Image (cartoon, rainbow, N blue to C red; front, side, top):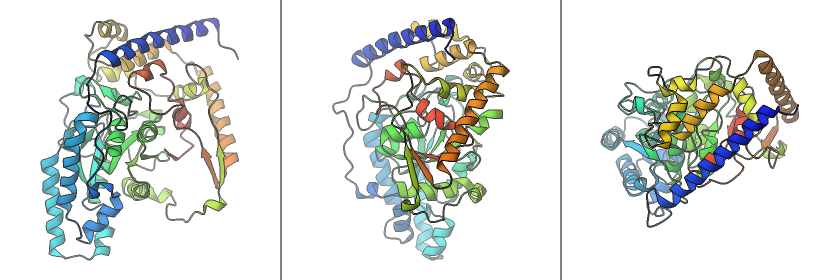
Length: 447
């Protein structure tokens, strides 16, 4: 059914607003922002930084490499590169060196053989970074929200505890978009993260700090989360590997904002890494008991698989209508985004914040203000919900029937390569390429 006249006018105004904001963004790109002598960080010269997590763990277990040397190599790289990319927003170098020294001491005692060590601690001594939205004891946990800038995690998120229990050593926490609700990782607390392949381009979001940190060899494995593409877009933009597991496999406990009600069906915590061979071992650790739902050790022969692909979604100038509607209508018990902005305390007026933003006085980012404004205007009745629910079910059935148990569907993670900074403001719904693959009954997804 064709959109109403009012809907067409709203779309036109949104497009015009996006275009104007884009012009401001492009001007800001030319006139402001950090200036660097080089558009890319220096290449890696330290051999230890070119090994996968699995390779590093094996060398450490075999006592061919000292854990303290591995951690120090990553710390040196972070100090050299992170000021340019701003991926890691809080270090824990002193604690990491102590933990690395403890690993070397344990290995020097030679109380356990290599096989036992691998079974107990598959990531023994491997450097790890964690998205700031996850609790890492003693580290900030604000999700880029100014109201939470003093929030410090008193414990570890479940997946962080599992990875630490497997021997991984956290080096720090990584940047994200404000409240994890935008595909450029920038906020008022930590600023903006930059793509290591070209500092003028975005890193994606909301797990973008993790994506650029891994790509720049400042870490080798990391923790991300994904609703509508927050792992997959950063993986795509930064040339790393990210996996959004099927819902319910990996525990989400210990991150902010918390997913509640129907949102729990979409939020997935997953592994991010620089080398593909680390994906499955990371997933086995992060899933905990949930790994029983998967068959990761079953052999798969590529010649027996069926492959399907799509070049694009046919979309529109601004958005893919069905994709966005599917996401919005699934939120049966949503927490209002505007309440998250106030951290469930101070009342926030999106319109007033927009006026303040235009004057440079708002503590919120323009994507968050825009989303709060849209939330106030968009209203979904039960009739509309049922309509879009039927569309979702039809899409699910079509894909399940097509793929069966031996099908692979190839689909773009994004319609373009990593855009330049501020450009996402002119194409706010380009995330629909990952958003449409957010259905709770579909997945897993790899970028």
